[in-house]
Structure formats: structure tokens, C-alpha cells
Image (cartoon, rainbow, N blue to C red; front, side, top):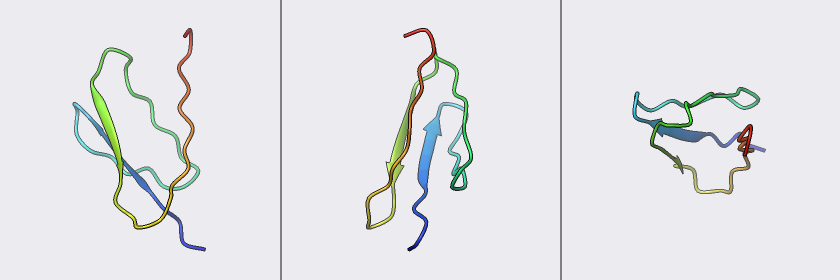
Length: 50
């Protein structure tokens, strides 16, 4: 099974966390994410205080 990585694209520039890593993006920052692989990716988004 191949690891699929999501590309996170906040205003500060794109990042590609490794499987099992986390990323923190400020709540007031615009961002997007994309899956450049040809297979499904799974991720968890946590929004504290929501």
C-alpha cells in the first residue's frame, strides 16, 4: 500500500506533511489542500473552539 500525501497550501506557501505528521495553520489564514495522487487520501481536520 502506497502512502498518499496531501499538499496543504496556506498563504505562507505549500507544505507536504509526511504520513503521521501534523500541520498547524492559523485560523485567520486562507488555505486549501489537494490530493495529487490518483488514489483516495484520508486526513483529519481539528478546529479547536468551534
